[in-house]
Image (cartoon, rainbow, N blue to C red; front, side, top):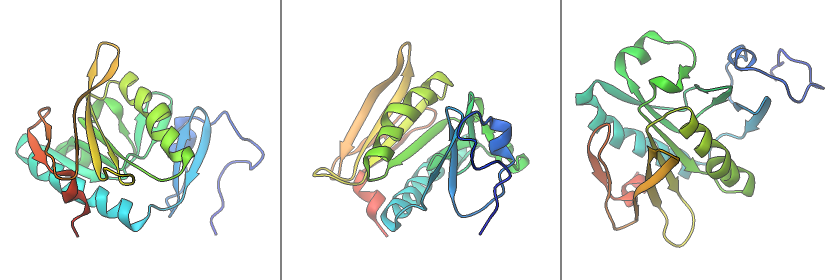
Length: 191
């Protein structure tokens, strides 16, 4: 059992500095609107999907001097998120030991977890905050439902993210910036 460095009774008012001081551990702790949000470890399917997406994006990003990494801390204005996959400059990843700034992130991806709270977080909370922070490309993957896996690419426009591509299993999703890559979302379920 770990002991957090902050009073249990304090529910809100945390800062990114508080979030960065948290000890490393097995929980996924994000800072959203001044509150710590603790999520359980991802399911095996979620982890498989994130790993496959990291591999696909990483192969395409490498010639551009970028790398794809899983579950790293990203400071998004006054919040601290742990996206499932983030694409960042290789030199930044090699030099950093703590969270990355949103301005350093080229692509961010979220695998939508089951449950209404997780869905709300991935659609209604994180998406506009990633856009406001200026992350140019956002990929969202659905692992449940009739068309799963289903993936969409959103690019930053004048009023937030705009969907520029979407595909379900058996179709091809194409990402054109900051590098080109195409894949069938079914590949995300390949072991």
